[in-house]
Amino acid sequence: MKKDKNIGFIGLGNVGSKIANRLLLSNYKLFIYDIDKAKTKKLLNKGANNCNNFKDLCLKTSIIITCLPSPNIVAEVIEGNNGISKYTTKSHLWIEMSTTDEHEIIRLTKKMNKKGTEVLEAPVTGGQHRAESGNISILVAGKRKNFNRAFPILSKLGYQILHCGKLGNASTLKVVTNYLASINLLSLGEALMVCKKYNIDLKTAYHAIRISSGNSFVHETESQVILNGSYDVGFTMDLALKDIRLFDKLTDKFKIPAEISKLMKKIFTEGIKKYGDRALSTSIVRSLEEKCNENLRSRGFPKKLKDTESKKKGIEIKF
Ligand code: NAD
Image (tube, rainbow, N blue to C red; front, side):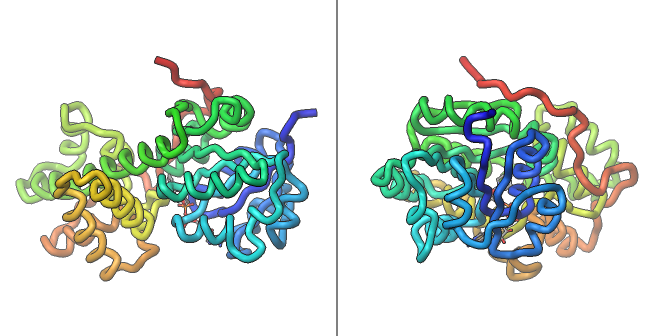
């Protein structure tokens, strides 16, 4: 029998549900909890077990994974009334997969360690289509022995897995990489709009950028659903803004006179006012389309992103 066969999963949203599904596909026994019961339905139908509270979830598992929308909600789940820190023991390993605050993960780890519970941070990057295929990248930080314990599970969830060192490093790196992705998204909107106004066919523009030095992961993925008009990237504006704020917190902490993130925060705050918290992050480009009275549609682009590669066995990236 596999060690750590029973896994608890908290937070079954856009990306959490896809990661949890990979565990089911890998024959783990999955125990799930989401404050919104509608989010658990699909996985329950596929064989996951429902938990009505954290006590139940902790009693039945040795690994607990969280994939939650904000540092405040993570804190509530861990240390709130009847939070998981009340029920974990030295046999548990908590794997934090949310994009969160480096300071918070360090603070909560100290609390969990007092009970003998071990902690690993393991935020994911690469989009929900790669979470679905099991080829997402995972940035992991924390003790090597915890990494070794988690690796058989992580290798079922992702492909490129990097141990980034001490706790806090993975959260910081995740926030940094999302900052870069958001800059890319905003600049792609403006770039495609220039092409449109110049009357360049947008499919030609897409491929010109793709083969150029201006290419990026965001272009190869998000530009496609923007050009389709579905904007369906499975990542929402509230989360994009949360991540920019976390980046800002880091630049403030180190007194780095960063200017771009402040501007991005303003743009996404306006986007949320216009379209709402749960609008897709790519709708930020729609805002530009409306201001320019022009749309960025082109034929032949998919409504939804799909990873064309089948699951690759997770590997640790070494250099
Ligand atoms: P989401 O907002 O779609 O889902 C969050 C889930 O958490 C929801 O189902 C919600 O009901 C649940 N939840 C909220 N409060 C809860 C509570 N107190 N107890 C239990 N469940 C609760 O978010 P998501 O897109 O799945 O992202 C989750 C995390 O992963 C975020 O930190 C995000 O930044 C990060 N992330 C997302 C993506 C993506 O593409 N969506 C990619 C990488 C990382």
